[in-house]
Each structure stands twice: as structure tokens, then as C-alpha cells.
Image (cartoon, rainbow, N blue to C red; front, side, top):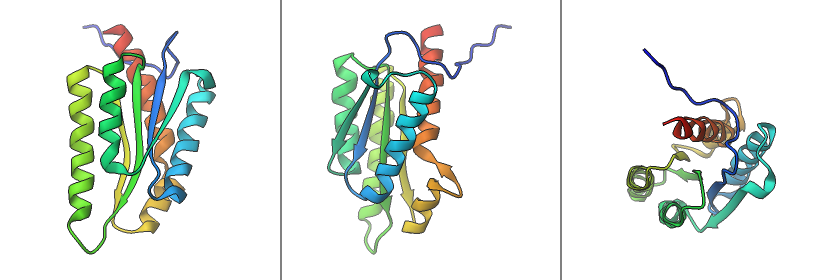
Length: 154
């Protein structure tokens, strides 16, 4: 039985878009740096990476949909951080963002990687942005490379 799997290598002529929230910049900027570094370390030229900044996590799927509809990118890396507060706003934003990103991926047949942290406390975000749990930006960049290669095969 044939097995198809993506590899950690850039696909020729592929462009990658990082859509990142400006909200919680202390966390999100570390995620962006991790994603860019991982892409560069695996052979993606800086000219093949677009960075799109949006106000918050709520706007990330909107920008992702616009990018996906343009047909210029092979994968979209969504990066942001939503921290639970005292209201239900956290659930609306985090769940809406995740659902929106999945919808973009399915409607456009494009890898859309969700690196939007939804955490209880800022310390949890710090742990996932270069802390003890690694860098989620780097993880989604590696997944984007793998998925782009898999899409090429499929």
C-alpha cells in the first residue's frame, strides 16, 4: 500500500503567508520570529514569506480567507494569542478564530496552520512562545512545510 507523507523541505516557487495578531505582541512577536527562523532554516527564502499583521485573533481568519482566495500562497500560518479573562469574550474569540481558520482551509483546499494560542494565563503563553514547551510558531512553520510538500504529492 503506498504511503504519502510530506517532508520538511520547501516546494519550488511556494510562497508562505504568516498572518499574525498585533494583540499580545510580547508573545506573538516571538511566535513570528520562530516561524520565520524555521522556514529560513529549511530553505525558504525571505522573499517567499509574506507577513500580514492584523489587530487581533478575531481578524486572522478574515485575512487568511483573503490570502487563500488570491491564490498566491501555498500555506498560511496563523499566529496569535488569546488569554482567558473574566468574561466569555475569550471563548468567542478563540473558538471563532479556530473555526474560521478550519473553514478557510477546507473551502480553499489550502494548508492553514493554527498557531493561535488559547491559554488560561500569560505564563502559559510564555511557555509556548520560546519557553519550556518550545515555540508554537516554529511548530506551525514545520507543519506548513510538511503539508505543502504533501499537497504537491496529492
